[in-house]
Image (cartoon, rainbow, N blue to C red; front, side, top):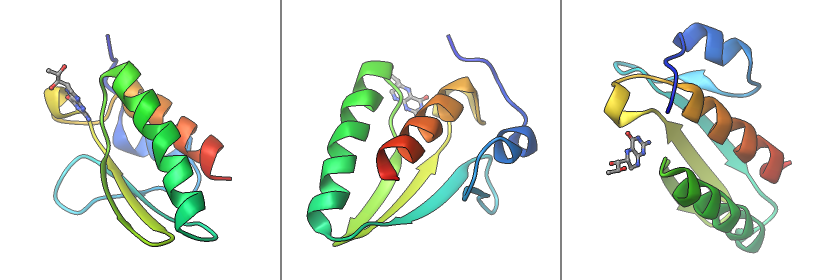
Length: 93
Ligand code: H2B
């Protein structure tokens, strides 16, 4: 089960993520070399997300990926968002 985390605390533990206006969520825009690189990372993220039953809100065009993370059930950010954000950073670098 997830644990609620303070938004500012979560943001300070991550690099390149920012707060979303008007809701408790975190956002990152990631630029890959090309679509293949983006899609390969997205495939890994999708598998991890489904395994966690914790899914990103995301938007992809060619080499650009915009990701928003929040825990809908908690109406805020949680340890699940932290874990998924760390995973996303790991497979995107
Ligand atoms: N993803 C995210 N980001 N937040 C949730 O609260 C959530 C989810 N809940 N994926 C899960 C699915 C829930 O709807 C299912 C029924 O377990």
